Amino acid sequence: MWKGVNVEQFGFTQTGIGPEGLSFDLFGDESIVFVYTPDHTMGLVATIINKNNKFAFLMCDVGYTRKSWEQMIMPGVQVAKNKVRNIIRMA
Image 1: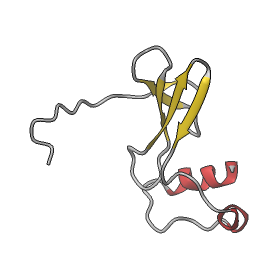
Image 2 (image 1 turned 90 degrees about the vertical axis):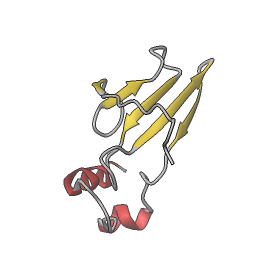
Image 3 (image 1 turned 120 degrees about the horizontal axis):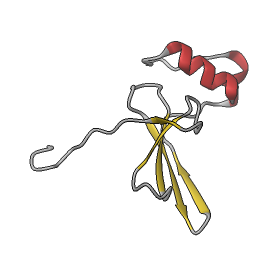
Image 4 (image 1 turned 135 degrees about the vertical axis):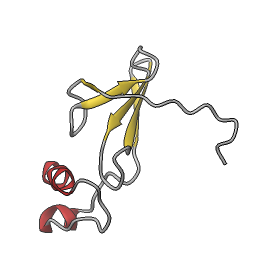
């Protein structure tokens, strides 16, 4: 499936953005920023897109229902239980 695709790893830097304060600026101009949001996988990210100071925030599998916040219901699969618990508490 990935044959011929040039996949490059990247690292996060301490920026204060997101629940862990870690992000990666894809082009170095803040137009696309990956925000570290560990949950089901250690590499899970949300994406902030900025064009002319208009923003879109793309996320998948990093939000919880009100019932989860109020009753501390954890997701079934997770790689960092304490981090997930902290994210729920922040909501």
